[in-house]
Length: 469
Image (cartoon, rainbow, N blue to C red; front, side, top):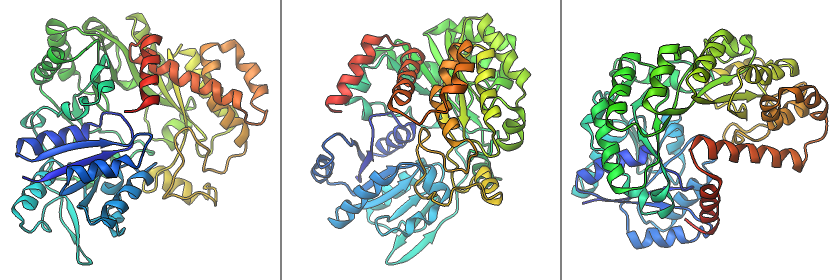
């Protein structure tokens, strides 16, 4: 039996860890999760007490310094092997050259982790396991990808227990359920096009779970834990209408618990909106990104028209489904006038809530290459340490101050369109704490409403997080 410790930096359910934990436990291995809290020194004490054979991290390209620090501490104590998975190592496996990394996992990890844990337990060679790059005595073994998991229901249900030892997550009235894997679209700011290319010829990229299995998982969850709202996790829940309508019919008959989901404007017609509403959908989200069609389709490669966005919103409003829109500011070649088009289009469709971000181009994406080729990147930008989505812009922008201020205040113009002329004036002011506070309030408002919480529940969650995990 191998002992595997997963470590993450915030109290949030990661489906990847839940799926890995379930297959590892099925194989008879011991698994635990450790979340950094306000007393970060405790994490090493907890790891020492657990005595892991393997310490695992799932990281993105943003904000992963915490994992590097812990991995260095693990290696300095010669405690265990370290393995890194997730988006960043998948697309940049050369990450293994860091001295605190023993193994990186590329792509889907269930089979690779199971094989690795078994090899550790039996003390056999693990340098030839598919999906892994392994560093041994200075040499790096680079292994091929295995085929994608075609049948998602061949795996056990994701391990919720690994997270529900934390009372805060256990008692949350909203529970997240995996619906599918994969996205067929090729937006320039996303890695999906690279992921598709990596797995070419190795199976179906987009896969949905059987409706009956999802219903079974929800029923089991409902029998054990508080459940007021279901949040379906899928790159786009509304992609496959044949699957969707079959699922919604069964869900309406068996459960009809209020739910939220991701969608895409080009996938929402009147029939889809009607069936979503009848089954209990009260909130969905879709990306507008830019209100300007040139930027949205030529730069961001969204392939969605303004008409499709307007029509989707019309149908969702008709059937009383609220919708969150995702938007970006500080886009390459974007003028201040085009940035305001984003506010105006959101106002026109009466977006319930918007999530405005600042573009942070990730190295390796199509948009990053476009920015590089056109010399639009600020010389001080470090691609190894990108800003957060709400941080400063790394691009050369003609109206930097105004665009950064607009990102923080855009929700006001969307909610109250009559304020747009006023916003055009006040965004000329220097950045200030009032703008920051207004933006943070909008994020809190979005979370409360999109998770079907009341303000009392939100305050309780905030207080719990403030104290500890």
